Image 1: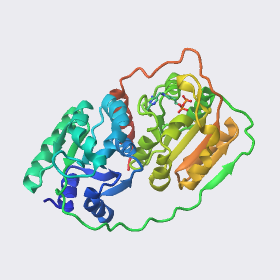
Image 2: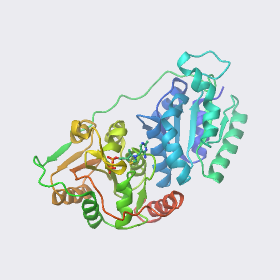
Image 3: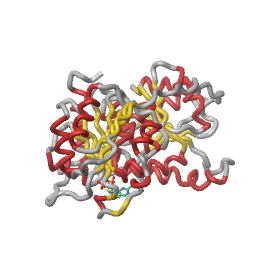
Amino acid sequence: MISAEFLLGQLSERGVLEIAGVPCSYLTPVINKAATDPSVRYLRSTHEGEAVASAAGSWLAGVTTCVIAQNSGLGNMVNPLTSLHSPAEIPVPMILTWRGEPGRPDEPQHELMGAITPDLLSLMRVPSAVLPRGEEAADEVFRRGWKEMEECSVPFAFVLRDDTVAAEELREPPASRLPRARAVTSNIPAETPTRFSVLNALLETLPENAAVISTTGKTSRELFTIGDRPQHFYLVGAMGSASAVGLGVSRHTMKPVFVIDGDGAALMRLGTFSAIGAQAGPGFTHVLLDNGVHDSTGGQLTLAAHTDFSAIASACGYRSVYNCGSTSEFVSAIRECLHETGPSLVYLKISPGSIPRLARPDQHPRDVARRFKEFLTSSPDSP
Ligand SMILES: Cc1ncc(C[n+]2csc(CCOP(=O)(O)OP(=O)(O)O)c2C)c(N)n1
């Protein structure tokens, strides 16, 4: 068997500064070690898709985060792995436990995923290797896996069987309570501007050093139409994961980080509000433009009319929540966010609809990702 200390040592030797994920009982020793070891941070994810998306954000900010997850969580990762990491060619190391490994007794709910784990990984073109139980052999597997991950710029799954890491009792410190959010509310929406006019106002307000991550669909297309800059990361796939990517970026940069989300996308990953409230960097601002519909796919209603996003953000630990009723209130809120400690939510109701002749980001996601990474890591306000 290998120890958790050995495993984390292997990761930190290879530059891992953070682990992120959802627990599996096989991973308890690793989580214990990370909770008490100052050389590695532990990002608690609410969903394995959120874990891989935030690890992509870390990579964009120049930091390696290793995702830890149970193979049942592979189902939750399919969307970001196939529509973010694959097109943008983002490498992420993963330690994936193998529940339901054929030939080993396990619970019935793990049987099918256990049987298809190797095929599912290879179907998604995620290379993988089983971690051996001996230190020397495990070191060799890490060496080869890391090389392939870096050379091919792909996620790599190190598959952890039962009885590989010596067991330990859980010894996490208790969770601390978050301060109450400062809420700034305009009770009556004075206007519902278009997304295009709000995005124009946002870009006029943001300083050059602000990073902007935009959600899937017409938000990214409008942002690109207004102006294409290295500061922009267009999430053309992985609907719902923009906030998790921003979470990952914000933990490893001194620059202000603005995520522009839609109501449909935010609802798809509501758990990420909780991860952001507790763990986002102080420069994080979540801009939520709520048109009440899936505008990008033809205007079908979302459930936003039944959802109080500002209350959710407050309840999840965001430091400030701005419920704006007009573009001018929106601009003032953005200015405040640039000077205060986040995470903050800036919420504005907008009208459905877009502009005629809407362009689409015309650079390959791989190039957009590298340009954004260069912007985040090369200038003086990197940590
Ligand atoms: C996982 C997934 N499901 C569905 C889609 C199709 N899709 C693309 S954009 C979009 C609507 C997004 O709605 P919202 O976040 O409210 O933004 P809006 O289009 O209104 O600006 C949908 C459903 C997708 N890209 N990915």
